[in-house]
Amino acid sequence: MPVVSSSVPATRSTLQAMPDVPVMYKSTRMDIHDGSPLTHVLGKYPADREQIIEVSFENYNVKPWPWCKIKHIRQGYQAACDYHLAGYVSLPINVENNDRDLDPEKGNLGRMNTWLFEQLAKGDTRSDADLVGAWLEKEFGMPAPGAVVDALLDGDRLASEGIQWGRGIHNRRPFGSLHDAKIYWMFDGFIQPDFPYAIANPTREFLEGIIRMKHDAYDSACTHLAKLEAARVVTHPKLYEELHAGYTEFAAFILLVRDWSSYLLMQYGIERRVFAADRQTLGRMSRYAETFIRNLMRLKDTQAGKLAAGKLVFPDPFPLT
Image (cartoon, rainbow, N blue to C red):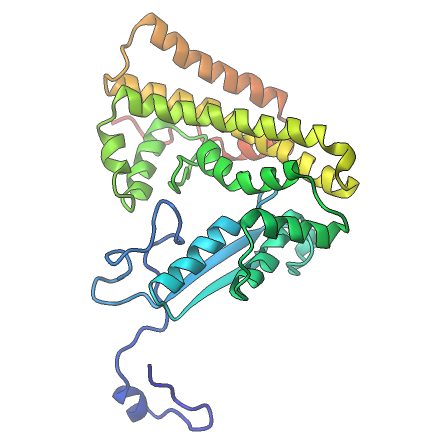
């Protein structure tokens, strides 16, 4: 790419003589991740232009739970290397936290992501677990037990499978109507190789698999909490307090999304005649809705409950015409 020297003013004729080269393009609307990997096809946007830079926005502390993004950072950085992109930009954005303090070194455990990216960019060959463990020891002055590292590393998976639809497919309206869900399945799903086709023509096994994924994610979050509690005596008190409180909210929000998503998927299955509209099936669908309401009332004063209530969009705002 030709570069105009900063010491020489760039005249109109100079710029017109330069080749038409994009400064920055992303291959997809989303970051490189499991659901939208960079490929030779997706690596061009528009179709005749090569992506040259991957930009990843690492949001700190937006969620009321810890957010370790080393897998995401590693995927984007590795894709930039594998596809010979000009660079990989990881932008640490500290929002809605610390009284508008924009210092990424402050805040909750999500502040580890800046240091993790720095190590990867330096060529650090340690594993994800070793890197996270090293940051925790540096930050808290003592080694962290494996239960702490495991809980942080598994958070990204649990968020994808418990809160989103899995494989990087966003759940834009987690507590909206079935109408909303279908719109966003197609809108977010088009970038996936198979999801929109599978959800448009679902099988019982496919819908049951998503419901089971939600329940498994909640069970995993509870298992992590139990292991954290068992390791409390060998965990730095401040680390334990922050991680346990955050993971408790995390598990609670997964629980709420689990129940509402299961209700929507049952409703959708009945609509598509994948599930029979019999008493047993309708009763199961109703129990998911009843469980959601009961849990929301129990959690209404928690961060997870307030977050869920703020996202609740029901009944369907669209007219039934």
